[in-house]
Image (cartoon, rainbow, N blue to C red; front, side, top):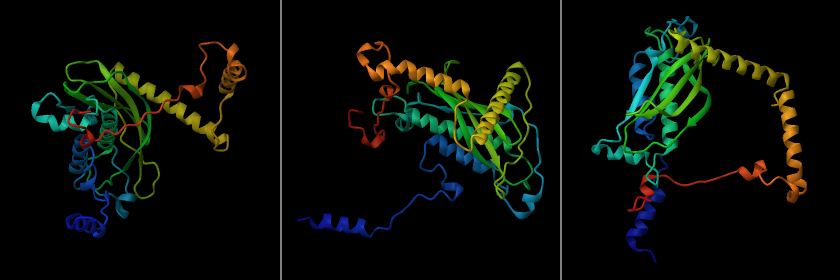
Length: 295
């Protein structure tokens, strides 16, 4: 038989209304995320004060386009893990084995890239409506080595290429004492009109110097490759298909795998089937679930 106090507690939870997280208000966005996400959302909110989400007048008005340099919208944040008073911050980013949780950094990477995109698209005219900024793709996050939680980390990014309604943002992370990057990636964002949902023109990018020009040229090539891929996808009737070179490569790989499939004893000892390379690992990384030994 349950004790009276336990029965009362169970009854209390049974009657309690279900409370769900509501992100309809910009104040609540990022409230339950990482400290960096909270900071970035608050920053966006402060910068958007006085601007309209959309209305009938602003939807028909042409937006004010202002050329911007990469430096005008670049952003960076520093994780001050080395300060003794920031133990709560270390705890937020530590996994059960005492290392940095990459998933937390990836989350912050996307949030910071979104803030940079927002800043590049923003104008100084309060009559301009705020555009909807959407993450279109992420080009291969390179995670070169695992950072530690005793050094300060710096996350930064800048716009490197801009089309009519899309932009590329190069993101990178490093230890505060080093210039060597341990993580880098390229995010592609597209801007949408909040009323029509169609692509909206964004501020052009002004590049200066050989390095910025090289990044912009690379963005042009990636944009052309994306357009060509969409064209092939449309011609194939919406079905993903390989080009002739891809088909030939697939047949060559299948031919090499035939001995391993039909008669493994005669196959090359170094050959491995694709299905044998699959690896899956799942573990919980909630700080409150660590034991007193921090495991």
